[in-house]
Amino acid sequence: MEWKGRRQSDNVEDRRGDPTSGGSPFGRGGGFNFPSGGGVRRAGGGLSIGTIIFLVVIYFIFKAMGIDLMQVLDTGSMSSGPGYEQSQSGPRTPANDEMTAFVRTVLAETEDTWHGIFQAQGREYEEPRLVLFSGQTESACGFASAATGPFYCPGDHKVYLDTAFFQELSDRFGASGDFAEAYVVSHEVGHHVQNLLGILPKFNQARQRMSEEEANKMSVRVELQADCFAGIWGKYTQQKGILEAGDLEEALNAAQQIGDDTLQKRSQGYVVPESFNHGTSAQRVKWFKRGFDSGQLTACDTFSGPV
Image (cartoon, rainbow, N blue to C red):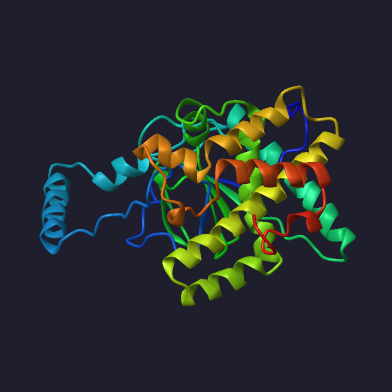
């Protein structure tokens, strides 16, 4: 994928190394994630009163010794130089590293694509923000950790992406390549498009009255449509001449590797179809390819007929 030297989006929020990103005691509510085989992690509870009293006592002991802990902590949060994200723990992350540049470029390409499609329909496209984080962070849909995989939160119109996921995509799922990574971003942006079109609000409202099995079946249709929307974006990048030989195969392989049936076979040795909520490998490949081949929203109706 020839992405270098192209426009980069300003809608990326880099929280890597941010000690204030923390966690919420609630799981994700209403978020739509790219499957990674893990569940939602819940953050632990707050500090007890005894612990707080102990910390206060320690603070004043150090104060009496002439050591101001607050000043030490404040000094520790200083940047190590221009171009770096501030962090109080762990190595600082260059704000202009190659992965960030890649994500910004892919996001910019999705912006161009969906602005054009919405404009052709007499609508205005609202650009989402993409949050890069490492380990854990908070969203309007609740706590996000590396175990959740990349996901879109309709509550704040943001895509959340742990920076380690692309490596996991290659090492754990056997889906390497920059266009496989771009597929992940464009799939989550596809959920944002669904949100703007009113599809996600209707689904979130309807699933409150559904059984778990019914909600899973509807979730599959939602996810496959996001795959189809990602395929539409792929079509537009092809028309720009950005794609290289083998790029389409990288995306199709990624879709194949993260199908519900493939993930379940890999993790437990058997499949439970009634628990599928993203679609089988064959379905994910089919719908991404349908969006890619047509480049049309009308080709992405996953809610009518079999999927």
